[in-house]
Length: 71
Image (tube, rainbow, N blue to C red; front, side, top):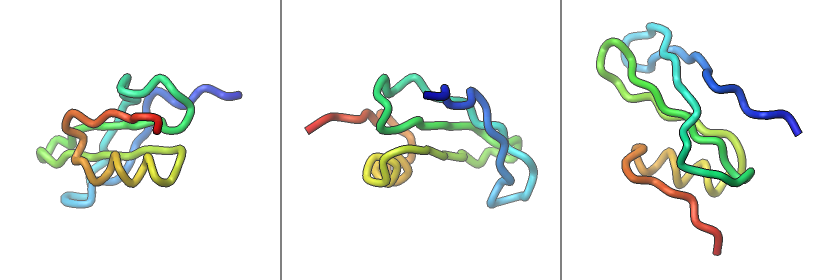
């Protein structure tokens, strides 16, 4: 299995500048790889790959104190 990229780059939705997001350490499982970064304009960018439910939960959280729990 390939390791997820440590950094990804996206276009900021607010100012259209490139935003570099980095892989977060909040999840040690393979269900989700959460990313977070801050644009120079101050806009927070969240991204995640993995389980659709976990990704939706992470993106809806705004990135604050999010953690993935197994049920």
